[in-house]
Structures are given as structure tokens and as C-alpha cells.
Length: 116
Image (cartoon, rainbow, N blue to C red):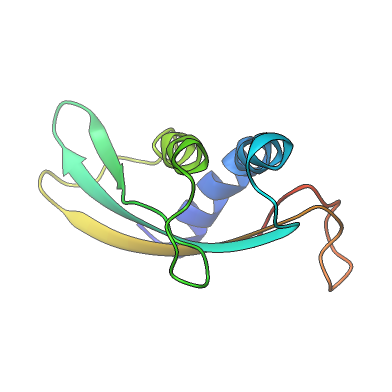
């Protein structure tokens, strides 16, 4: 599975990841900017296709995310639609995510969501 396939699947869930951030900002998250590196393992399963195991998430300061935000982001990552891997094949993925209340510093995007 190449990077473009994973990147395309991530593009599909970015609005949902943004919703996770927005919900956290409305309740417990005080920072108006959050950077994380999502680490997940893709494993081939003959009955399911590709199983996605998202590990606990940490911010750029290596602090664990609040449990509701962590659960929301991990749950969203586990909905990625990816083509099946071979039985027992695994791929480790590290994917940077940046969330902000405003537009990204480079002027791209529309704010309040995930950027990569």
C-alpha cells in the first residue's frame, strides 16, 4: 500500500478529526493549536481486510491527549477505508496532524480542523 492511498483515506476523515478537535475545544482543551503525530498499525486480516490499530496519541510535547479527544481521534482513524493487505502483512504509519482555531500559518485551509 503506498503513501498516496493512505493520504487519500486520511483526506476523507479530516473533517471528522476536526470535529474531534472542535468538541475538545468546547469542553476541556484550552490550547488554540494542537499538533500530534498519529501512530497506527495496519494489519491484513483474511475476514476483514485491513485492520487499523491506532495507538495512544501524544501531542508535540509528548503529553498524552485527554481521554475523550484521544478516543475520538483513534476511533476516527479506525474508520479509514483502505484496500486489503495480505494476510498477516503489517504496515506502521506515522501521520502528523495539526489542529488550529484559525487558518494555518501558510494561509492554506479554513481553520478549525485538521491540517497536514
